[in-house]
Figure 1 (cartoon, rainbow, N blue to C red):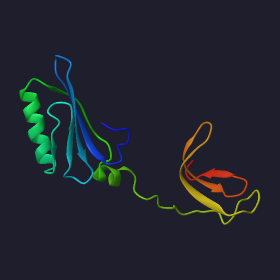
Figure 2 (cartoon, helix red, strand yellow):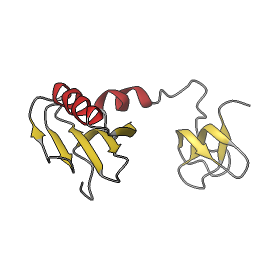
Figure 3 (cartoon, rainbow, N blue to C red):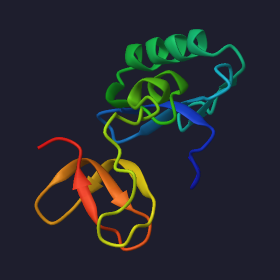
Figure 4 (cartoon, rainbow, N blue to C red):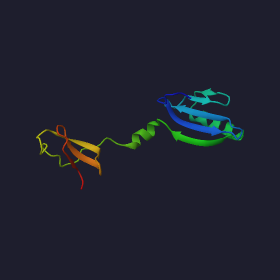
Length: 129
């Protein structure tokens, strides 16, 4: 419906055998619903309106081709909690003496994982073997 989806929480795409396509967007405010295609409805009643629209269009012969969370606030909280720095932090970089910082998902040529990295020379040591 637009080039930017920062305001969309969930999207449903529907298609009719004759080729018509409809997109239903539930915005992140949890209330605003916009329809691209179909009758071009708009609502301020949230998921209730989505359920009614899905029922209306599936009864008219449309099929749901995809349904996915775009910027769902609930899933954003579940994705990755704040990284907790583990014990065993080196006091300083053994190569140059600069401070060392924790990186939760460091990637190197052959490995990925938690690591301690030097803020100066970027010396690194993975937290687990």
